[in-house]
Length: 269
Ligand SMILES: Nc1ccn([C@@H]2O[C@H](COP(=O)(O)OP(=O)(O)OP(=O)(O)O)[C@@H](O)[C@H]2O)c(=O)n1
Ligand SMILES: C[C@](O)(CO)[C@H](O)COP(=O)(O)O
Image (cartoon, rainbow, N blue to C red; front, side, top):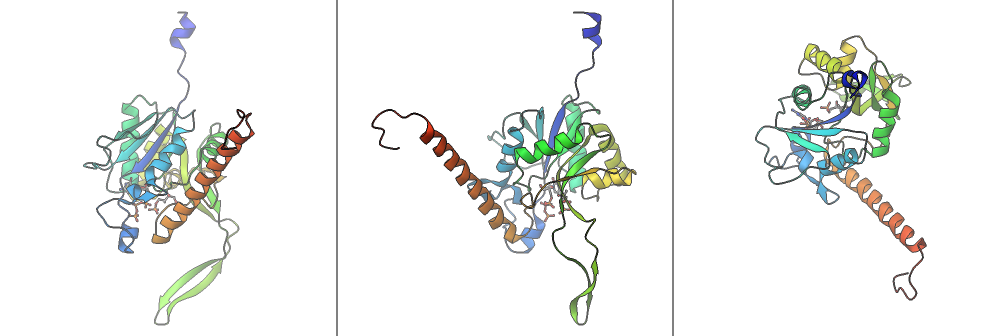
């Protein structure tokens, strides 16, 4: 081994961190879920919701490893394998930010470096695709700050007042600069860890923590389908989109098979 080889720094790696320690209180409160099985494990299009999320990350080869952060005492993974290049850490916290902070520490314990990138993605955002993840990485890997997938607000935006006459419009707000924050959100592990530590446990996404540190994360178009399953209607919508994608994949496979030369007399073509 030459001296150059011995001292060469290892290349920057990409990690994924999936906070998976919530319970889905909004869906439970709306009567859509029994509290015994957390939202991210509810069946959607034939599989526990989080399995769709993990499959998308497993399909992105340049992601070195995915860490699924679950609540202490979560028995769902006993005897179950999550996905390729994926492991589980039972260090989830009381808030999403705490789960992510604990997960970042666990990544460092698994050999990640503070210079490495991490893509933080909600377990409950189960419609993300490998193409969207790749688009975020392409847009951010040479960025000084990092960024997030987001969706430009498509509708007219109102603020509300609540009074004796019920809920009424206060005013219509300019929407031209408004985006809905999605995930994944991609930042370097060290700066993100420091920003989360300073921002506190109630910050709702990683970008907010970076913003509180005076930084301006890049907004990368995600799309309407990358929504988070939060309220009762979202379950049926997610199932419909995933089933449609599965049907399209089956059809594409069928067409691929049909277009291949078939042995004489094959009854299926
Ligand atoms: N203490 C928490 C709270 C949330 N999450 C995760 O953060 C993601 C996004 O959160 P959200 O949709 O808000 O999920 P819940 O917190 O489960 O839902 P709710 O806010 O309705 O309780 C989910 O994958 C959820 O499992 C987490 O890991 N740890
Ligand atoms: C991170 C997030 O998905 C961005 O939209 C979201 O903030 C997390 O969950 P929340 O509890 O619904 O804010």
